[in-house]
Image (cartoon, rainbow over all chains, first blue to last red; front, side, top):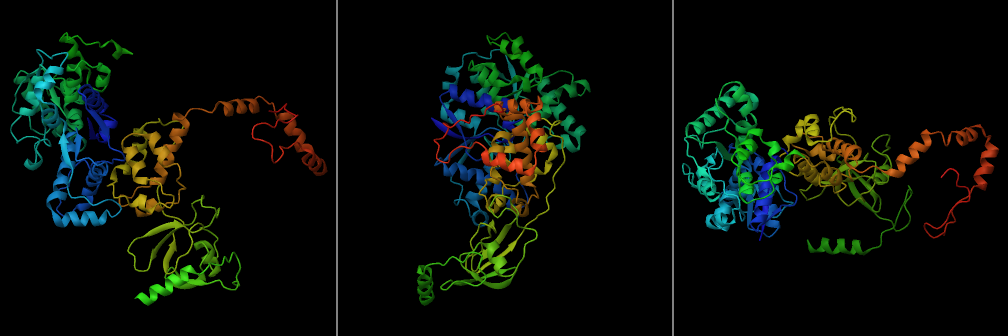
Length: 299
Length: 267
């Protein structure tokens, strides 16, 4: 089975660990992720200005690329890409006046009216593969790994593009349980990671990230799982600095959902690019004694 | 009106008479109206925009270069009467059409950053650091629509955002640096300069080296040709002419790859 896949710019550069692990895992599950031809940036942040239609052009153009392929579905992974594609899609589906303006402006492309469905990776796993079948495919059950499912802002907000109703965290919970891990619930699952404040107001962003990690630790989690490169930057890559600045007292290694999936499916850890995570992530997995060949990491 | 349509199609059926550079038109040649910077000129229907403008009395001291569609000096913007679309072309390549409204945009300001190609790394981050405005792209696609060389400009800009220098170099290969993309960009990007940086990085660091070139440069540096070059420089004109006349040359109809010269000491 082939599925149109929109990776997003960051997955091709700084978050290759999210991308490669996704493609390899899906291949192991019999799904070929077919990267869209000629895709462009999704726009990254959905513009809230009511008349700012030019910033909808980028995501709409990507959705047109899906339609051109004759596909009715596009799978995506990054929380930001998912959010901006899904919201632009709703706009094109529901707002006749704006749809017409955008279609008139993009007169070199075919008309678009929201025909494509934007699907997040987790929903695809649940609906097209199913948790039971996924459980059957697990070769390295992540027994004893206590993981806090972290959603951040854009997977559940706003309500009409939420991957599941806001405030419920069943998708990641069931995902983690299918992999053999233990989902640890904590009250910060949908708090903001600090987002782009890390550039303009880094202290505020660090405080936001520290709060999340602290709650995860208090709840008894050993690790955090997420699907957004920006969240990973604030909570993962910056975590060492948070620890040194004593904003947190304990490291809580972070993983992308696709990294845990690839490991549980018994794939070569190279597809996970752990070199792009803080080293605490791979150390935690090693400490668990799972039968994983990490040797080639050194090469 | 149907009558006009009939007349037009009759006109279209009439053979076109090529006029070349002639200022006095041959019998049977017809003229069409074009509008240069808003003023109407009747010009022979077979000319390129550049020739038509010269026919009309314009003299190019800038904005014309190779006249062969590759130097990028004569980008031109035009509309046709009754059509909202902007059209783009090179004045030296595009044939005039009746009622085209045109202006040449030989130069458009676009910043080019300076860098030392020896110092920068062949990574997307290098390009992002030198041209941060890359991320102002909103994928409006005006650049691609403006390109007279049919380069997929938006696609190479997207490739660079995705960190793919090789793809950007490949997609931008036909760029002639005319600047029309930059003139239309709502994000104010200097696309063609960014693409040139991508191709330079690709050429220097990514593409495989040409072995035969390396060997020839080595030969030159080792002094293999110093002596013969010195002799040539010291020869008088008569001797040079004699040598030129007597030189060995490949026969015009020799099958490719089969002819070999007798003198091979410098090969």
